[in-house]
Length: 416
Image (cartoon, rainbow, N blue to C red; front, side, top):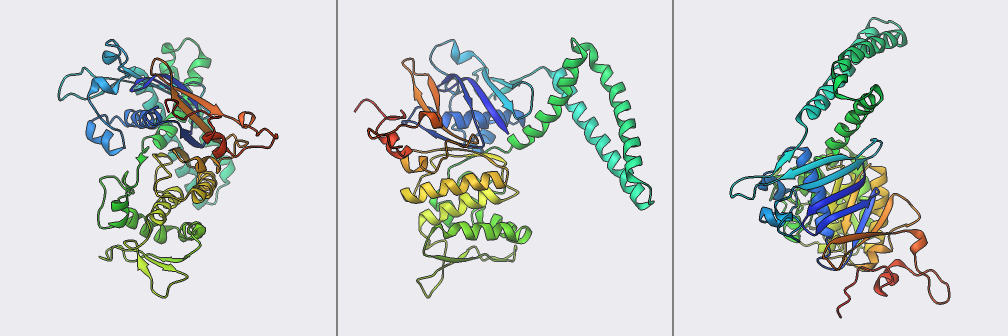
């Protein structure tokens, strides 16, 4: 999981540092840089995946423009500088850097600047560890078949592995000033490689009504495109692989008091491009084409959260679209619960004050981040903690929605 970010020279993010949690809500006035933060994470993910062509960036939800304007265009000098994205991963001892640059020439693409030797060593260490782990597993399986004491075999195999590891890693010790730093590098390499595997699938979702109603349309990304393409197929997969996850989805849809049940076609090759929804007040069922927009958005969000095939780290831009304020509050509470249960890290932006009432500031895994732009136009961020929660004149605790609308949290326009 990502614990902190530093973003330098990306759009309005001249130099921004922010600590993040499992579930992060970003608020602020229009144009303050909320979406830029999401895009910076997506850019780090694309860099980790070594896929920096414009087509890939667009498919991830990044608003690609002229390369000069992808930088913080506050000075002529900035238009030629690289973009620096520094990511602190959970349990890693230091931040991992992603540095990308562009020569501003037509038909060229962004490139990653990196210490190639260090990257090759990281890759070698990861492959070495994976091969040795597989070898140990094979030995243990053979021992089990031969009815040999597995503990003895495991200890012998791991001793041999550690001995080979020590000999192999000594080959690289000349690059590092001391043994401790090398050992720390080895540990971090394993952690970062595993965390990058989660980050590489990062997407910024902005579901659209048309994509959610028209199930026949498939996106270029599986299982879900950034606008919601592929939802029917994902629901079929969930039903086939994990019936308990489908049960979770149906339970969450009870947020709508009229909802009774959801039927999904079982046949993957079926041409039936619809789900059947039953309303407890109606005698006739209907499909997604007749469902209200808010229901489809919530169905999308819940499926996104519970599926094993969707990204482990992702963002939702403008999560409040088409949702009733009270539903927004309850939805956020449900999404936080699901993020913890299914090990997801989520970033959402919103302009709806009711979203804030779903956040528990006493839970460190939940973060409320207020963004604004300073006098130079640079995006700045402030985390609202429990101690910052305002109180009324009678010393009663204000709801976050009310505090936001009164201007106590910031993030509102000041010009009118």
